[in-house]
Length: 344
Image (cartoon, rainbow, N blue to C red; front, side, top):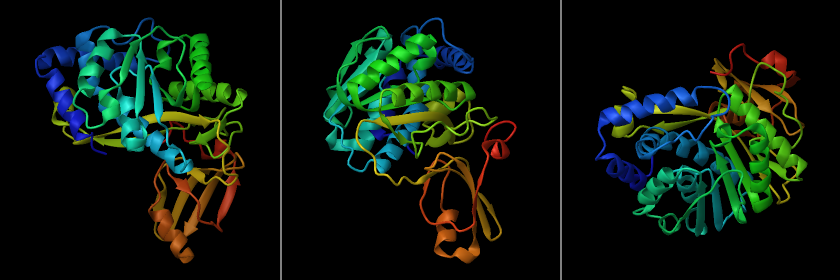
């Protein structure tokens, strides 16, 4: 995916007066913190330069992950057309930009809540020239989490739980779920991030919400207690600024993320299976690991003899859904499918 042209231009303008050395030093510190498991003892963004560095370095990847999660949700809930959005812990507004891209003109009222005033100030500046009217008129509010969450059709909680103690994480998820018709929680695609998503998922199901994505069921995750964890990846094309800050040669990066989306709306009884890793393509055979609606993990084997089903399997992607009938499929235990060090 490409970053929206209006957001890319705003990021360039917002960092134009800062030295590359300042931004790089802040990026190095942010990278070290985001790679450290466990809770931060203070907000990760601590000033205007941090906010700018975060926006230039992390906002594209966060936008890409949230957009992928919301796109998967829209596919599962084709009638979903939120008019109001509350972005909890939204910082510079990556999730708000993602939601505006997925839901377009339907979305007309956005509120971003965050603890860091510098992030909110920068988010306001970035959205000032957005193509979306909802983004231009976003309400940017400073709060301290857990906080009272305004009612909304859609509530996003992205990349913020790691900054809170476990009990505060639960309180924030409960407050967000109580306020929203649909709630999306997104975290980094690490084992640590997956555990936070599982804790949030338990809260959501305990509150009577239905899991809409990525899981095709609301039962216990079949990967719990194994060496594997549920996560996905979204590829984002780097802007020139992003490449300079990272000293990167590649024109893209893959953002690994874990997420859960729950809704109060009734769900269709037949959900497609979710593809849990890159399909393995061999000569005349495609192998896929699936999370199934009956809450089991299955290894689907699709041979060339299956014609259209085989062609569909060759086009399938990690994180996508699988609906064609598969005659060569066996249910397996998660432990048999889990690699030693996660998914490629």
